[in-house]
Image: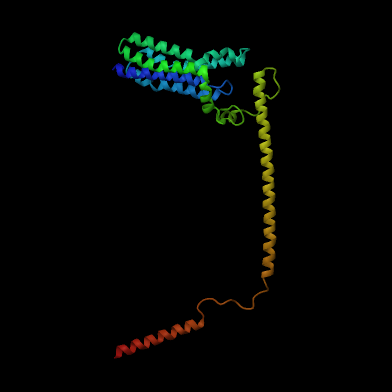
Length: 283
């Protein structure tokens, strides 16, 4: 069964929203290397999205153009990565690639919406509702992007909320620090400013880890000394007290049990009870 018109319209609108959201989040990404982990998370999500719809497109024989359009958000992120790689691997400055993410990555978002509009005009069915919904997404997005660039760089505030945590940082406090091979680090000074900045972070990480390790060893030694001293004091105090309280061998063993008086009293009571029962039966 082909893809229903309503379902296709819904997916078109969702794809437009995803493209706009990807543009906004791309603009919030920190420059590499700090933006490596945030970019990886966004890229994985952009790949999972079309893959999750693959079986539906196969069953309903969706248009190939429409299928390929769902990979557009992943392509936006790949272009950002290539531009950042050009900055790290050449003399290109960050300012030279800033236009890509200008206005919440407005240029790639506009390109994605143009491709969606062309698809909607091609398939004929439900043209007007699809174009209206796409316009309701794109126009407010573009207006907010222009306003952000003119007034306050709102994406930077969003970036500080999303990516400012230690988890995302590529240093001793970040998630990626656990995957860095300590023995494979090259901490010598480098002529390249970007590489030297990276190695300086590694050197700071190593110095901090050494300080933490030394402090931990000192605290452990102090704790062990305190425990040993406390045990020695308790042992000497306990031994003296026991020595003073213990006298020579006792003269007699302590009594235990009921004692002979209680046993004799119980025997006499039982004998009297037997005599009383015998007399009662004779009467």
